[in-house]
Structures are given as structure tokens and as C-alpha cells.
Image 1 (spheres, rainbow, N blue to C red):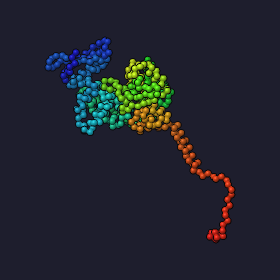
Image 2: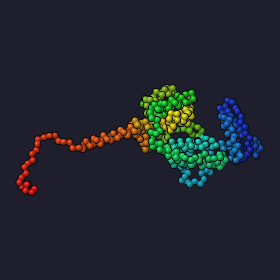
Image 3: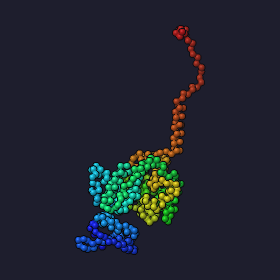
Image 4: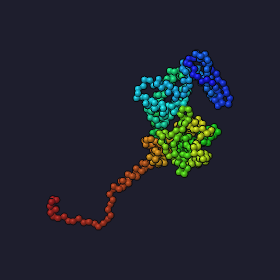
Length: 419
């Protein structure tokens, strides 16, 4: 089948054919008459549903009508950005280009670059920006990443690929401020204790299709190791030291161009975290089930697929469950906040907590050291005891009783001086 590029502005004819037995059974096809050769080439794509096929045809039809090569209209965002980069970035000062390039390469492309341009929506951009905020990106970093996305999609509007720029979102600065406020008080993001965590895990399992127990294990493991869901997805058998009961955190699963990919942890910082007795049985069971394959994943979905925070959310109906349990604020990333808060309350020294968390800055770790009410009361009692001990040591003590001392009789000369 020919996969030539149709000339701009030609009239397209289209059809959809169902081919049973194919994982993507709907073939959408466009055809046109070449104005030079008068031949009739075509272009097609296999898609999973009839609605997806209709959407593909509609994009091709609109692109041809507006004078845009249909092949460009169906590019991924990453490829489209490469094609129109100079055009989209025109007029920018040289000093602005470096942070824009960094934002595009390090955040936009890994997060949404694999999506076709017309499929990028306001909701997708919202979640992307919130993900950058949750990953502790600075305000200027988020601003530059969003700005470069706005410019590329604005070019897509001019090209007629989309009608409205979905990256022109508002309110992200307020969301960033809210995230900063929350991180100043991580206790507001943490589950209160093990029973609350276990209740959440069991409720998520009960709400999932087939009541898949693995979702509960993922939640318990993430909270008790204070790690990210992507890091839990990336753990392999060889990363677990069963003698010392520790986990060498060295990779994570994240969305990328073409789908999910495994890469190094955030900041490329390898770290070792403890595996506490409460979760050792579930880890031991998974190690035994994996057998001798050192690269076997410890945690997968019900069909052995890789896990992401979005997969966990959708599979367990997370938003519905947490509201029902009274944890409206709780997100998947808050399992990490839970573990770090528990460790801080348990008295883990801040320099050790920083290594477990993998924080680049000690100030980030110190946010988890905010004391609870009981700690404040104990601190007040300790200060009072210290001051009381100080007062006791500074008070003169009475001398023991001894023989009475009689003063010597004054001389007459002394008396005269006094008079």
C-alpha cells in the first residue's frame, strides 16, 4: 500500500474498513488524485476503535482543506515541534532560547511529546503542569516549560491543525503556590498511621476490576519506603537485598515518546531505603514468585504491564475511593509524603532522612520535621525542666551548723574613730 504524502489542498476521499483478528482492527484510509500524474495514491492507518478511525479521517480532511500536509497534522507533538521549531520560536531573544530548549527537552517531550498534536487537550496540559510542580520544579522552570509548549501549539493553530491552543491555561501559578504551601506542612498530606494506610489499600483493591491484590501491595510498599509510584514500578528483583532488607533505588518508569520507558531516578541519585518488617512478607512473596530472574519486575499490573500513577488512579478508581474515606486531598504522590513524615516523626536524623528521600537540598527534607502537637507539648516540658534545673543550681545553699563565733571586742581607739 502506498504511503505517499498528499499534496497540499487536494480533495480527499476516505473510508474505514474493519479487519477482524487485528489488535487495531479499523483501517482508516484517505485517497486523492495527484494533480501532476493523475494517479490515485492513498495513505492509511490501523486504529483500535471506529471512533479513533473517524477522528483520524477528520484530522486528515481538515488539514487538507486548510492547506496543511496531512502527514504533519498527524505527527507526534515532539516531531511537530522539531519541524516548526524555528518558526514557533521566531522573535525570541538568544538568552531566552536556552531555558526554552531545556523546558522542551526535559519536561514537555517526556511528558506529552508522544501524543499527536490534535489529541493534546486542556486537561492533559493541566496534568502535565501539575506533574512538574509535584516533581519540585521551580516556578521559573514550570513557566519556561509551559511557555515553549504554548508557542509550539500556537503554530499548530496557525497551521490549522487545531482550532484553540490548549496550553493557554490559567491558574497554574495559584496551583504552584498551593503546592508550596502544602509542602511547607507535609503532615497535611500524610496518612495518620498504618491502620489508615491499610484501610486505603484494602478499599482500592475492593474497587478495582477483579479485586486485584497487587494494587494494595503497591500502595503499602510506596508509603513504607517513601518512594514514588514510578520508582515502585521500576524495582527489579536484583535491587532488593534480602539479607539486610534494603532496596537500592536506581530507576523509575515514566511516560516518554512512544509510551512508557525506564530511566534513572530523579536527579540521577541512587539511594538505599529500608524495607520495614510490616512489608517484608509481601516483598518476600513477590521475590519467591519471580524465581531466579534478577531483572523480573517486583510490581506489575494485572496483565503484567508497567505501572504509572495514572494507571493506579484509573484501575482503582482512586479519586472516588479517597473521597469516600475522607481523604479528598490525597494523591498518589502523597504516599511518599506519608512515608517521609512517619520517618521524621520516628526520630530519623535529618541527614539520614535526606539520603533515604534522595533530596538534593537539605531544606527540602527539613519540611518534614515539623512537629505534631504531642511533640510541641514534650518540647515545652523539656524546656521547663531545663530552666528549673538551672534555677536550682544558681540558688545559694545554707551552710551546715557549726560552733558559734563571738566577735572580738572593739578597742577604744576604734570607738573614738566611729564617734
